[in-house]
Amino acid sequence: MWVRADRERCISGGRCMATTSDVFDQDDDGIVVVLTPRPAPRQEERVRRAAFLCPAQAILIGEEPPPG
Image (cartoon, rainbow, N blue to C red; front, side, top):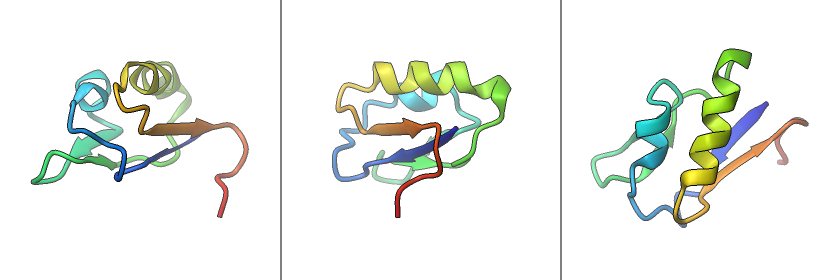
């Protein structure tokens, strides 16, 4: 799995960080920062939940290598 965040879409909700703080953090402005772009299998369920809970739909996940 890979994970990316669209920092332009992020509205600083913090749900991603609250769901899995070992993968997501926030910068000084409250915008999402991905700490672990290739989460371990044990983290995948929480990453999917974080993406689902994101009010701005700023969390992008996939199974294949990330584009570009």
